[in-house]
Amino acid sequence: MLDLGAFEVLTFDCYGTLVDWEEGIAAAVGGLLARRGIAAGRDEVLALHARFEPALQAGPFRTYREILGGVVGRFGEHYGFEPTGPERAALAESLGQWPVFPDTVAALARLAGRYRLAILSNVDDDLFAATAPRLEVSFDAVVTAQQVGSYKPAPAHFHEALRRLGVSREGMLHVAQSLFHDVAPARALGIRAVWVDRRRGRAGGGATPPSAARPDLEVPDLAALADLAGRAGAAPAGS
Image (cartoon, rainbow, N blue to C red; front, side, top):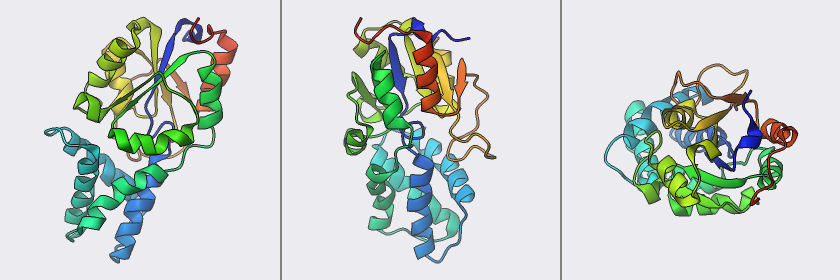
């Protein structure tokens, strides 16, 4: 059993883990397609996103706004239409309104009393800034793709978090929904990882590519992690 009392810092993926990115993606892209007269189910939209986004992120670095514009372009290619400028921008513009999971705010508040918290996210600074107020907690560090010039599963986010927080790999625990983007690179670096299985009970990988990565701990949601941390007797943050 993972000793949650042994860690000083919890780092979090944001979109998919704290924020329901699948709901946001499905609503924005599904709405765009519907306005084009294209009927595409939620699972189909998410599976295509899981194919398009990582392929674009694996190329030369572009901002996340540009990546999401490219994702819309790939949807256009797939369904046979040329997106307009506003259509290409629509997915990124929707990001600030993607819903926070119902358990996120309360769980973060509980965890902030026991650990230092940080964000490791594949977005631009201004896009995370649009979400941050709704998380209702102050983070000790926010590391974005824009800052490090790459996208997870590349390791730069993790290296920068370790440097910025001044913590050892043994003192940092990464918490994320995506095995592909987060658990796999964390474990490859010798960083312990918690998998928040936000899709428990649902078939397929949703908006996330498949991965055989194995987490150190699996929980169904963030509230469950906060419960376990409370029972573990972790040292208060800053001690």
